[in-house]
Image (cartoon, rainbow, N blue to C red):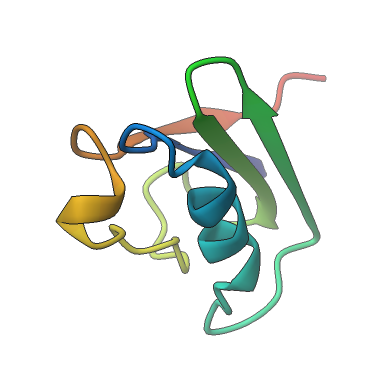
Amino acid sequence: MRVALMWEARAAQGRGAELLEWARSQVLAYDPERRETFRAPQDRVLVLTWWEAETLDAELPELPEPDADLITRPVHRWRFEAVE
């Protein structure tokens, strides 16, 4: 099964570039099949990673929570199962 992990955060006022660099610099315990990083209005950063896993709730490396002063709210995280 292919699992996609979605990690999304909103930077504190004026710190979008810093949050983007922080997210891009994070090293996971092992590499996903694919990793993409996006930015959006309101200083939002989105990271998608794709993994081969046995189940949707498999233990997989995820980006951590940034320091509280870098973000406006807790990180949002979702898991998706690929549908062929």
